[in-house]
Length: 177
Length: 287
Image (cartoon, rainbow over the protein chains, first blue to last red):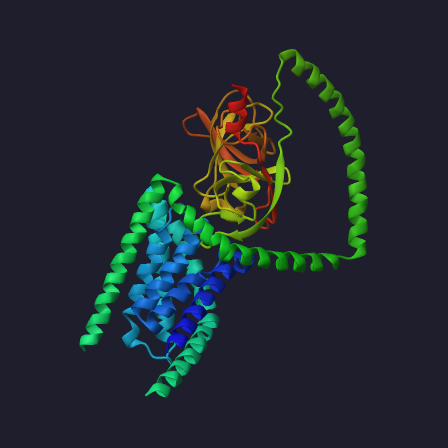
C-alpha cells in the first residue's frame, strides 16, 4: 500500500513537471497569435475532480509555486490562485464520472476563464489599466479556446494514467484482505 | 460518515494552512528578496537542468533544419552580403576618420568613460513565462556565473531587457516589451528624452510605445534611432532600443508620443548577451 502511495506521488510529480516544462519551452514556440495554452490549469483542475480536493490543492500549489519561482514577482501569488482552483474543482468529485467528458471540459474551461479574470484583476486592474474588453478579447478568450483544444488531447492521457494507477491500487489492496 | 467528515475537515485545514503560507510568502517577498532564495535553489535542482536539456534538443533540431537551406539561397545571400561588405568598408573608413577625431576631442574634454565597449557574456534563453500576461524569460546563467540583478541584456545590437532576479544557475529577465517595463530613452540624433514602455495590446504588432518626448523644434521622423538615455539609473547609455515607426504630437501640444519597432525580434529569441557592467558599477567607480 505504501509503495503504491510513493508511486502515485512520483507519477504526479512527473506529470506536473512535464506540463510545466512543456509550457515554458515547447509551447512557447507553438504560440498561436502570441498565445499559449495553460497546461497547468488542465492538470490542476483534472486532479481536483478526479482525485478530490486534497490532491487538486497540492497539485495546484506545486504548479503555481513553480511558475512563481521562475516568472512571478512575488512568491505565492500564482500558488494561491492554483491552490484555490484545485480545491474548488475537488468539490465536484461527486458529480464526476469517467466516461463523461462534458463535465471535465466544462470545469476546465470555467477554471481557465476564472484564472484569466483573476490575473487581470490582480495585476492589470491594480495598475489602473481599465481596458478589460481588450484583454478579454486578446488574452483571456484566445487562451481559453487554445486550452480547451489542448484539453481534448491531454485529458484522455491523464485519465488513462489515473485508471492504470487506480487499477493497480485496487489490486494491491485486495492482496492484503 | 464520520471518516468522511474527518477528511473534509483536514482538507479544510490544509487549504487554510497553504493559503496562509501563500499570503505570508507574498507579504514577505514584497518586502525582501531573501525569502525567495531557498525556492530559487529548489528550481535550480528540478526544472532548470531539464529546461536546459530541452533547449539543447531544440537547438539541435533547429540547426538540422537550417542545414537543408539550399545552396542557391546561400549563393544569393552571399552576393548580397558581398555588396553590403563593400558599402560597409567605405562607411567604415569614414567612421574611422571620425573616430580619431572623436578620440582627440575626448582627450580634450578628458572624458575617460567610454560607453561603447561593455563586457558581455553570452547566455541561452531556456524558458519563457508560463502565462500570456507578461514577457519575462529565464536564461541559463546565474549568480554563479557572475550575473547580478540590474544587468542589461542585449541580443545582436539591440536592448532586450534587464535582469530582475538571479538564482544560482539561472536568471530571470524582464524584456522591454513587457507591460510593466519602462525604459528612459532618447532620440540618437537630437538627444530628446522620452519614456519607452512595453504594452501588451501592441505586442502582436511587435511594437512598443514611447511618450513624454518634448515637443520642440527638433524634428523626429520615422526611422530615427532610439537609444537608452543618460539619465537612467539602471540602463547603460547608448544601447539601441529600436526605430521610430510613428510619431504624433499629443493633444496638449507640449509632448510627443508614438511607437517604436524594437531592434530585436522578440518572437524567436535564443541567445542573448548580458552586459556584466551595471550602471551602478560605472557611476560608483567615477565618484
